[in-house]
Length: 338
Image 1 (cartoon, one colour):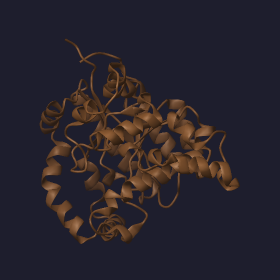
Image 2 (spheres, rainbow, N blue to C red):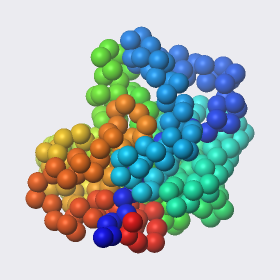
Image 3 (tube, rainbow, N blue to C red):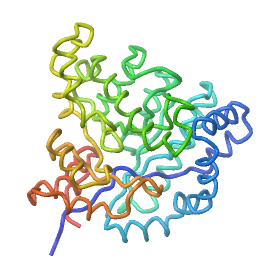
Image 4 (cartoon, rainbow, N blue to C red):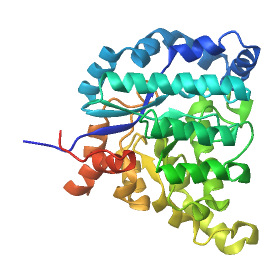
């Protein structure tokens, strides 16, 4: 009996050669110190204790394939670990970092093209360079898009300086996977792992709101954007955005109500509870949800298919869509059964 091929759109990889490029750079050390302060000592210490097991899971193909088989995942869309964004890099170093990262992801996928497809990286702090890097990633390396953080050095997605990049992504039909690294709320969240627990979903909600209210999705309606962690907080409280659109002139910046743009975006299923996933599907539609595990991190899930199976009221067609057909469309994959 055949079944729909399962595609995990939220799975990370670490390119060791990138670490070698930046390890002695004082700017990298400053970034690391800032992240440590924002995360707090308890969380930082625990993360350091996990590094050995993460290093194996992120880089060893046999370990990855074993874990994928255990989770029931047929294909991973592999993207860099967000710790390798390095948006502090100047243009020359950023060119080296991205080239090394994207060649590393492409090489890993080439080793098992039946199990992996790649998303690249871009130096979004240099938007013109990022547009060219995305072109190389898609047209020369066979990658299907890129992973982006939620803001770059204080620049939000509504900034017009990024328009050339959005235009190129739309032209290339490239998937842009939005995944935060930390939170701009800073040291307010440096206890209890709140920098991740609250901070990362908040960052995603802000990023998506800039895309909507900033008119990016009006100017570039064919953009393919998928947000990690179920889109952060936005899909669950989007009624407040709609209300602002109705009553606040400075919020009425778009052609349609903000909630209507959610059906122009995609969201991974990493929301932990079946009732939360049911609500996400009710708001955005089953056609806009894909599987996501956050492999191999502890804030991810190891039983994504069971989470989906526990969602009440889904048709077989909707389950198949979330299992893989939605992701296959985003990644421009041949539709097939496993």
